[in-house]
Each structure stands twice: as C-alpha cells, then as structure tokens.
Amino acid sequence: MAKLSSTLKERGYVYQFSSDKLQEITDPPAGGKRTVYLGIDPSADSLQVGQLQAFLVLRRFLEDGHKVILVIGGGTGMIGDPGGRSTERNLLDAETVRANGEAIAAQATNLFAGADFTLVNNAEWLERLGAIEFLRDVGKHFTVNAMLQRDFIKERIKNPDEGISYTEFSYALLQAYDYLHLHEKYACDVQVGGSDQWGNIVSGVDFIRRKTGEVVYAFTWPLLVNKATGKKFGKSESGTVWLDPAKTTPYQFYQFWFNTEDENLEEYLLKMTLLSKMEIAAALELHRRDPKERHAQQILALEVTSLVHGAEQAASSEKVSQVLFGVGGIAGLSQEESAMLREAAPSCGVETGTSIADALVAAKLAGSKREARQFVEDKAVSLNGEVVTDEKRALAAEDFHNSLALLKRGKKNVSVLVLS
Image (cartoon, rainbow, N blue to C red; front, side):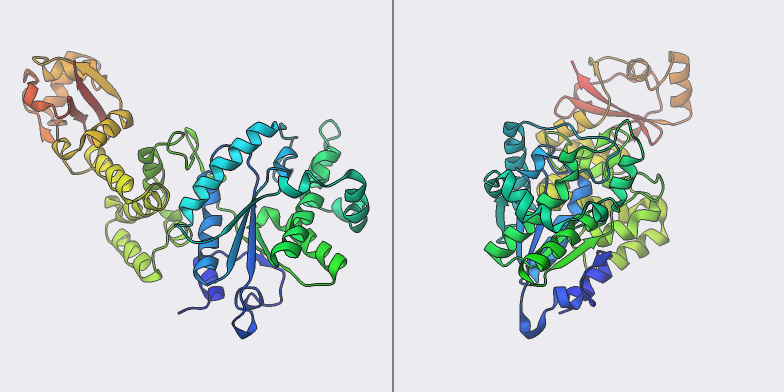
C-alpha cells in the first residue's frame, strides 16, 4: 500500500507544509498516527463544490488510520474569516450560525461515508473565553507588525475607505486559540486547509510552540481554479454549485461536472474522485481517442455525484442526461426520473392531435410554421429519439411516457412536451 505522503502528492493535494519533509506529518515514526483538524465556518447552510476537495483529503487521512476532527466554526463564524475578501463580511446572528453548522455537519457525515471522526463546535470554548484572558493569554503572543505582513491585510488596508475592522483583524488569533484548545484536549497535531489559510494555520503552529514548546504542523492544498475561465472553482453561469440537493439538484450537480472543460479533466479526476490512478488513466485514454463522446466527463460526473448524492441519484442523473443529450429513450425513465427530466429541460404543454410543426413553434424550437417545416425537411427534428419526416404528424397518447415526450431540434435544442 502506498504511503499517504505519496498518495497526496500523486493526487495533487500538496501545496505547503510546515515540516522539512511531508512524511514527518503523514507517516510519523514507529507507526504513529496524527490527529488532524479542519475548520469550516458556517457562513451558509450547505457546503459547495469548492469545499469538496477538503473532505476527500481528510478521507485519505482517515483511511490511513489517522484521527480527524471537524470543527464547525460556531464561534469564529460570528466574526467571519477576512481571507480572500476585499470587504467586511456581513455578521450572522447566532441562530443562523447554529442552523448552518448543523446542516454542514450532516453533509460531512455523508462525505466521510460512515468513517469515525470527531465533530466539535468552537462556540463551546470561544463563548467562554473572556476578553481579558484573550488579550493576555493569546494576543500577547502576536505582534501587529507580523500580522500587517499578511497578504489579505495588506490588500485591505490599501483602501482607507474600507480597511479592516478589529473584529476581522482578530480572526487569526481566534483560529490559533482553536488549535491550542484542540491540541490540549485531543492531542491534535495537524491543521489542514486550502492554500489561502496558510497564514492563519502557521499562526496557530507558532502560537502552540510559544505557549507549550511543542511541535505541531500545518498542511495546505492548492485551491482549484477553472483553467478556462480563471474563475474560482465551484461557480457556474447560474451561480454557486451546492452539495444540498434542495439548492442544486443532483441532475444540475451532475451536469456541472459533465460540462468540465478538457483541460481540467485530469486534475478533477485526481482531486475530486476516489478512482485509482489506473482507472483515471483509462478514462483519459478513452477521452483522447474520441473527445467528442465525452467519456471522461461522464465518468467524472458519475463518480462525484455518487460521492455526494449516492449511486442511485447519480445513475438517474446520468440516465436523464443521456436522454436529453445522447442515447437512451424516454420510455426507460422511472416516475422520479421523468420528474427530473421535466425539471432539467424547458417544457411546453401540448394536447394530443397537435401537429409536430405546431409543437415546434409552441416549444419555441421554431420561429414559425414555415421554419418548422424546413427543419423537418432537413431531418433535424426528432420525437423521443425518432427522426420526424412529416410536419403534419399528430401527437398521440402513445407518444407520451409518464405524460412526457421529448422533442428535439438538432442535438442541443430540446423541449419536454407535457401532455395537457
């Protein structure tokens, strides 16, 4: 079995670490194991895909026998991490932070696939921390000079109209205190996070050294950025892609991954799935041979959707996608999958007896009956996967499955016909 350090490097998860060699963190001597923690601020009631990488990294630690602590930032979430921000965050009320934390905890349990981990909320200890105690026992170990060298603080103080409040300025101190608390109570000795968290994490490493004289570690992974757009990973044209199916449906989630650009494929397969290196190589070879078939995108979408929403929802999403954009007939869809299809594509109410030409116009797949006739003559129109050759052909009850039929013009122009 490959060492964890080798696996993390192979998957592209390694950005920075505070030890001389990564093995000091991942493969301690005499078969020892670490206790690793990740902090999540509950700024929303769901994780989004940009955060998914973190949980796959932690799964690697869990599978290697290390302990994992997930810290829900019920306390720090009341402050807001200033990292990566050009303006102050809106402060959330305590009830919203609590509810968000509970929702995130439930998602984390699913992502860890039943593996044992420790879940804590830093409000438990931060709410008991007095102001005098904080300033004497924590603040005394941080210099303003050093904090002003942080990149995100430098950026914020460039603009005198915005600046940075003392509230957000103190965030790094609270995060360092979290690390100390977890080190003392749980023997936690590794904090992990995205590369934008490096400054905050090493502040905790240095704080523990000053307070206790003991060595603890920091480890970060690279943030994902869409190479084609330069945008932060997790954003689509319609906005953030959430892990909560009520905010982003499993089908929309599947399509987000299926629409991955070719240049991002290898990185996403390595970082966002649990497929072996051999399986990924095979998927990429399939893609190389016939890119237009998008075999690798299909594998990526199925794997990640299975991780987040389960194999059944992933298979249904794939089936609906194939009906809409590839092979597969509408008659093979279940009641639930038919509902997913109707939600996934534009729809139009029709009655039996409606001609194909009229249906094309009603569904806005043609601008006029004349244009509809031309599309039919060009054999560009299909109903439930069958090419239509007669524009006068009338819709019949048997054309509908679960009251739905699929009308297409070309490969990408689709409408779900709903039987009135």
